[in-house]
Amino acid sequence: MSLALPEAEAPVRAADLVARAKINLALHVVGRRADGYHLLDSLVAFAEIGDRLALEPATGEVDALELGGPFGPSIPDGPDNLVLRALAAARTVAAEAGLDLPPLRIRLVKRLPPASGIGGGSADAAALLARVAARYPTLRAPLRQAGLRLGADVPMCFDGVPARVFGIGEAGKPVSVLPAAPLVLVNCGAPVSTPDVFRRLVRRDHPPLPPLSVRGFPDVEALAAWLAPTRNDLEAAAVELVPAIAEAATDLREAGALFARMSGSGATVFGLFADDETAARAARDLAERHPGWWVAQTRLSSRS
Image (cartoon, rainbow, N blue to C red; front, top):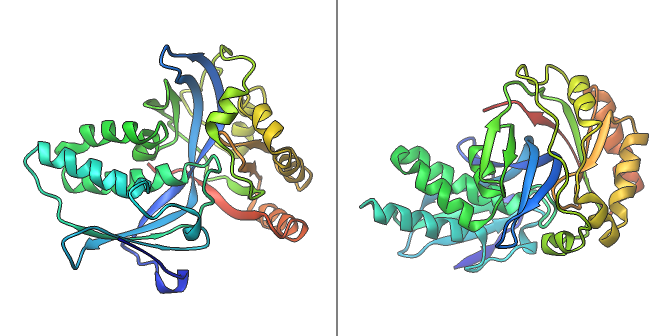
């Protein structure tokens, strides 16, 4: 059961979940498994901005999903919805442990553009799984494993901490310190198919990321300096599909970003800024220049 609601009819409450945007600050493709999955070495962080979910008991005997927010109409509202798939997976995990998850009413305020390289659907699914894990801590490991079956980004979103991520996304080592750096996210509005991007890769055996300092990154300047020699190995292929990705990165640099790059498989581009004032001015200028683009000023989250 699903119902599309205007955002005004789905108010955000203090107790709601925030499914924070996932940012691939660097992403190296270092190999490929026999089953076709690519092996990654990526520095992953999260933004303060994200989708919102509210969970409460359903009034009937079946789960209910209500969609709101600017991107609510753009995502599936049936069984293919990742949140409903995550709920089904959580219910299976709970049943195997002899626990029963009652029917839920889920209100999802979709603020992040879909198919945009910042893990929107994966973050939504992970937020639901993490809430169940918080209620039943003994289920944390099997719930995280169930998340991997939903998508490679789900485990890192489930953990929700800045980390260097390995494998297909299931393994990670937390970063000790990450600055709450001013951040501007820009998306030109064109969805990007991750399989199409990977199919266009010319090389799949790049060197890994350089070593991380045990002290982490004390400020945004240190983070930008470390990122400078790194890459997103998916960016060139994504730009072939959506040339506006390169335009967005150039616009962010010209607006004062210390560093700008595409996240994930695109098309969202992030810019790191030295201060909030410069970031705010850049966000205003880009929104005025590209009225059809999604532009969001936020910060990197340094929270665990």
